Image (cartoon, rainbow, N blue to C red):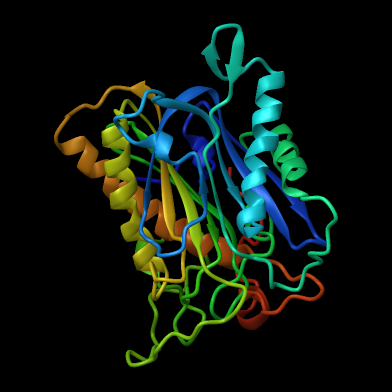
Length: 336
């Protein structure tokens, strides 16, 4: 396996990502949209999720494909971001056909960033407009770090952010991850090294090697304003909704590799899966297993890249990794 040419989830052909951020709000929205509808599934392992239309993604439901997936800040208010995306898609003639009407299918998930120092004194919920803006910005290249749904994200000791990574399997199938990291846990040990280091390619998040210093007896603390890592794992493989859900389940391993602790009662940790169906599975038994492993690897790397790329802003409650440990490598854009 090797990273794709951009090392972004958009290495999966036919998928685009758009970000919209509000610096004063210290929050934002990220949208994954397909050039055509794609198969989607979801798996939740955190104890405090916030979601929209995820019941629709069960394998026994009528609608098997979606038009877009939304990751947003704003807690429950951020669920309205999907409404802005749906409005924009409807204006393009996209959506599930019901008679002469089109109903865009846009599941979404949110993270809690209401206590991160941003201005939350709005008179009208801003997330619908942010969702529309993110859709309009969708493209193959997008920024990492303090952008989109990761704009105001935090971890236990450092600023969080938006991350992405990709892998191309030996059989030619591509897997990619997109994640907004707002975790209760840590992504580093006692020093600058990332928990995800064993899965790093090159120096994509500093090339610092594995964690050298950590306290195995340290207990996590709960701080207001943080909790929930929300992610999307995508592939160009042809998967049923049940197979896509299994990929989402396996990919949660990447979250546990990169965040310590993860999946707590206070996190709403969630992974969407997206499959465009462009490539048939070479082996219907072994290839899905490889996809799950690739998804977990991509997610771990994307989490580290998110925090590594975060940049400071006035009023931040926590420092950035680069501010504490030094910039060290690429600090903002996907490769390519």
